[in-house]
Amino acid sequence: MRAKLIKRPKPPAPQLGGIVERPPGELTPWPNNPRTHSEKQLTKLSASMQEFGFTAPVLVDAAGVILSGHGRVEAAARIGLPTVPTRVLSGLTATRKRAYVIADHKLAELSAWDGDLLKGELEFLIQADFAVEVTGFSTAEIDIMLDDPAQAVTSDPDDLQPADITPKVVSRPGDLWRPGNHLILCGERARTGGLRARHAGCACPDGG
Image (cartoon, rainbow, N blue to C red; front, side):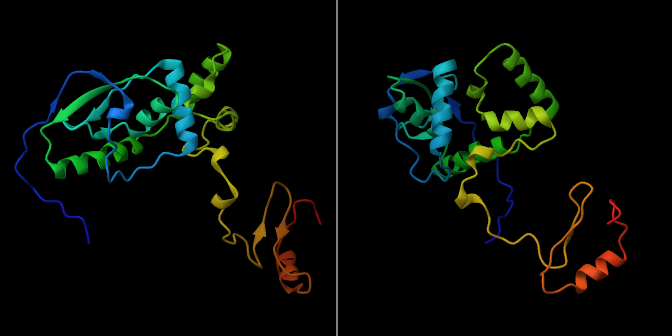
């Protein structure tokens, strides 16, 4: 089934209530929340809260069902916060609530990092002897970025577990790799035809 863009009359604007402190146990997770929170993320959220406090209120509906902030609520419960700030988002139909829960997660993914600016900010924190890991970046990620600010920062090298590494073959007989000033031909020892063909038409950088 393909998504359709349908023009509808503009719905009434939702209303956002004031901040109310509520115990995490009083809040109910959205029953069909498609977003999951890994143990690693929850650990980082907990560390951030202990450093900066609970800074972003949780959005709930009138019944106390969480619309935004599931991970923050779970992290807060883990570190024993007695209450968390909440705001009631009212005026949404059941359908619009479902759409909002998805949009709240997806739209945040569409932003990007400026590698050079991020590197400068991290270097400042390191020079200030700040516990830079509470930013959410792992030590491995920070090391990579400081070496090469153009390196992608969308994945955490620490998250690479054996199950995450694809078994897909990335090289096949006949492939010629050039690591630095060397050439490596992928082939079978018993078959030298490919080696002769490649070697005959190749100006090897080391004269070999």
